[in-house]
Length: 395
Length: 223
Ligand SMILES: Nc1ncnc2c1ncn2[C@@H]1O[C@H](COP(=O)(O)OP(=O)(O)OP(=O)(O)O)[C@@H](O)[C@H]1O
Ligand SMILES: [Mg+2]
Image 1 (cartoon, each protein chain N blue to C red):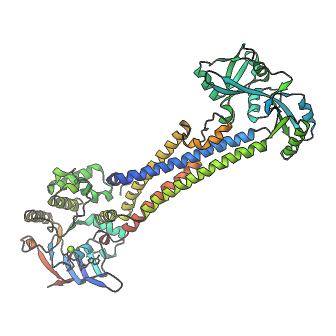
Image 2 (image 1 turned 120 degrees about the vertical axis):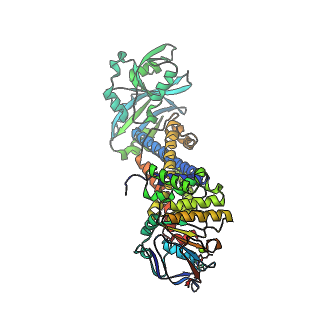
Image 3 (image 1 turned 90 degrees about the vertical axis):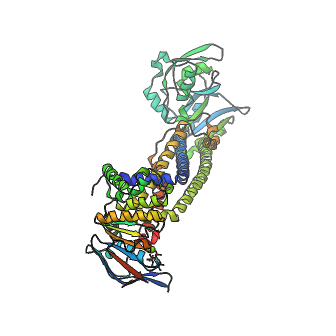
């Protein structure tokens, strides 16, 4: 026996598929759609889960904002000492940040000021302040920008520097020192980071005030108690704890995954209907064909090999196509339509890109939920017929 | 050499109902012999062919071909035996309607994992010999009855088998085509093949190149 691949068996399989091209085209279409839907759902869920985890991780434990007439005002940094005196508080940081309206594109960027001598309240800023020295570039008049910001600015031909308009109407030219690379796309996309001094100048914020205060607590279990103490000392503030935020983020996420679960179940259900139809038996035409092949000297192995090629071609092609389409749909097109389901999520943050997380587990899972099941469902009925006496089958 | 020894074939129809298709049949056919099995419908002719081709197994008795016990072959080896020894021309031809003539004819070669040149040579040779080469790319379903039969004959010969079995080969043919088939038969006989034909067509009776005519009556050989 020669050991080379039997091309005629494969050719027969392809011919057999073409002979029932409408049926097989239908199966391949449904199969592709299901793979596409399943992998898209997994991709999107994974990406969001990843973003969410990173975002929650990065949330400050307690934020203290000054409220006047229901609106958020700058807070006096003098409050910091009093808060620091509360037992259990390990650190207080004055944050300086704001939104800058970029008129050319009609969008808001958030600008955050950091000071390398201070404790950083976000992990990504720790990395950043270790690796980057604003003072060293252009006398401190430089900034790092998120990818989304870079894209928008480049559309208006600002690739080296940007002119901020200060509240008094004068311009402030700031050099673009690089692209800000945070842990999460969600965080960095519309963000600009610069030194606190520069930000104070652009937004005209006094040394004695800050946008809000971030409080670090040694024991996370004390967060609610400490929040309450701060509230009592400063009745004109709003206290936001990371637990409040976590709950609302998580709620949104769980609700969205519920919808996904429903889609997932529908997809699987449809798939199993196809499988059921396949495995519930062959048409008399198909049975006869197997009988004829056996009468002509094909062994059961030959018949099953041929059927395997048929099933493998259809299912693997559909699987590959489905996964390819899902990759393009989720990561290139950013999941239009399906992303409408996350409207609630994107409201938390206006512009947001699904980060590319290539997850082999998802691909394996979808593969094992589909391809082998389809192949088995095709082979088993053929095997039943092929092992009968040929005479019985072709009479 | 083909030998049936005391072969009985009983088909079970229901729990009780049985049909004895063959009843203690003894038959032997020598190499190169051409034998015509004749008899009324339902007498058991097709059953004999099917047993010789190992397409079914006898209820009792033994079937030997070249001293091999055909009836005892496991399914896998029965397939190999057919592939290497038998060319079967079925009554209904059993072609695959939506495949081309050539693709039908090469089917018995496929399990041998042949190379393209071998397939080309063998299919061309039989298509020429049985005058169907001009239709090689036509779908079988678009062929006339006589053409379909020639495809079936070509397919039965593509593996160059020692034994040719033909079941009612002229049942679907007009007289002219039937006579043509008889000429083909003469050729095959001249090639030295062992041939068994099951038929009740009187055209086959009394032909000069037929070695023996055997009458089957209700599952037995009528002497
Ligand atoms: N698979 C089967 N199941 C049940 N009965 C069968 C089966 N095959 C054959 N028979 C019966 O066995 C008997 C012999 O059948 P067989 O086909 O051998 O006859 P035949 O001589 O070829 O007839 P014909 O000339 O009509 O082809 C018939 O009564 C037939 O009904
Ligand atoms: Mg018959």
